[in-house]
Structure formats: structure tokens, C-alpha cells
Length: 360
Image (tube, rainbow, N blue to C red; front, top):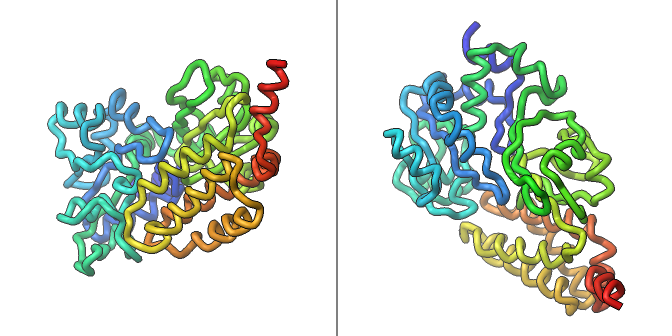
């Protein structure tokens, strides 16, 4: 059985967050004789799994990459430990700035071929040859997440049956997750879809859980109650408008004001855009400013309605999907923390009131 058939039988999907069938991407890449970029950037907030794969499984990772393409480039953020390890191993490194959008798929291809590390506007499928921001046709180049490439090598070695021995029929195979925040044992854990989320939280030593963030800036939030009762899978999380995504799990402590935390992330998001279109240049900073005012308890109710409207307008209007992710993340926060939102609109903070009550 050839590699594409093995991957199709295994049901491997991309571990970078999109969860697109890897066999489909490889078929197009093989037909186009595409080069490969192994994305080892850990581009999403709160993820460290690519760094772990490079640090602990580099030879297996190289084996997987060799199965996919003859010419392989290794993408890492400039100055990172991952870049140092790849360079020490004598591998050709595509070094990029440590910015959120710089490790997006089309941004990597654009950088490789002499452009900036920014997402290419309205791109075609990369494996068939995309166009850069100036309309030039780029050589066919496939981008795969480091964990995906590692899993390709494992499936070739151990077979589809091994891969499907964990997970669910629709979401098979082992997955890496990064768990951080209010936990005693932060780090990268191997798990699979269908595992109760409480098992992951317990394994990491979660304490005083107020809420759980999933998927970084491209994801959203679960209340503490939902987090302890929910299953970690795309099928289960769909009811909350969420996905497993990049495997980032962040525990927010009960004593922390969730809106202040969300405002900090929104401020970060406003500074990380590519600045290529109106939604990124103006829309994301505008909603970040309003979320900050909400967190400070000085946002009028009328302006809150405007914030909600702006979040709806952000989705689907950007040159890339970055504004969509930020809008989804913030909308999820407003739903999950609705009681806190109401209190802040009234000029109060639930967390601060609880602290004051405890002190009294």
C-alpha cells in the first residue's frame, strides 16, 4: 500500500488546527511535485507541541518529511530553541519573525520565495502553486505542521490500525495538547479525541478553575462546569461553537477576572495582524479597545451593542482568516462570561466584589 492510501485509511488530519485530511493534501502535492515546509513554529498562543516534537523526535520527524518530499524546508521562529536545534542538526531553516501571522501557511510560502512573512491574499491551494501578494505564481509548496509530519512517519512504520487504535472513528489517532495556565504541571501531553476533558485537566494538576480556553486566539472558552463535564473532541465541542484546533488548553484561575484576561489577549491580537486590509488594520484594534473599556467597567451599554455588531462584521471580510479567529474568540468570551459582562457594564466586577466580601 502506498503512503497516500495508508494515510487515507488511517484518517490522519492536519495537527496544525485546520484538521484537513492529510492524504488529500499529499495527493495534490505529489501530483505537483511540491517541496515541503515543515511548520515547527508553535504559532498559536499557548502551544509548545512543535518544540517538543523537534526536541524529542527529530530523527522520526526527518523520516516523515523524507517520505513526503525530496526538498524540505524547516520553519521556525527566529531566536527560538527550535530554530537552534534545527540548525544544530544541519537542516535548512526558514527563519521568520516571532509574530502570530508569520507562521500562517501562505505566509511561510511567501517568505520562502522572497516575499514577506504575511498571509497571501485570496490564495489558491498551496500544493498547486499559489500566487503571492503581487500576483506572481509561486512554485508548488506544501506546508505541514511538525506533528502531522511526525504522525506520517509513525503511520508508515506502524500502520493505520495502530493509528486508529485510539481516538474516535471520525477523529482517529493520537494527538498532542499543550496545557497551561492555572495548573501544577504545565506541558505537552499525548491524548486522543474522545477523552473526557476533566482527565486532561486532572493530569496537568488544574486547580481553582474559573474557565478553560481552547485553541488560543483561534478558539474560545468553556465555563468551569462545561470543562469538567465535556469530552475533548470536535464532535462534542461543536455544541459550544468550538473545536480541538491546535490542541492549546489554557486554564483560567477562578480568582482572575476573565474580562481583564480577555482584554490582554485582544490587545495582543491587535498588535499581531498583518496590516493588509481594513478588518485587520482598523477592525481588530477597534474591538480590542472596546473590550479593554469593558474590562475597565467604563463601556456604555450602547457601545457594547456596537462591539457585538463589529465582531459580526469582522468575520469573512479579511484578506486572510485572522480577523475571523479573533472575532470568534472574543464572541465566545462574551457568551461564556455573560455574568461578568453584565457586572462590568454596570461598573462592577464580580471577582473584585467576591474578593472584597472575603476580605470583609
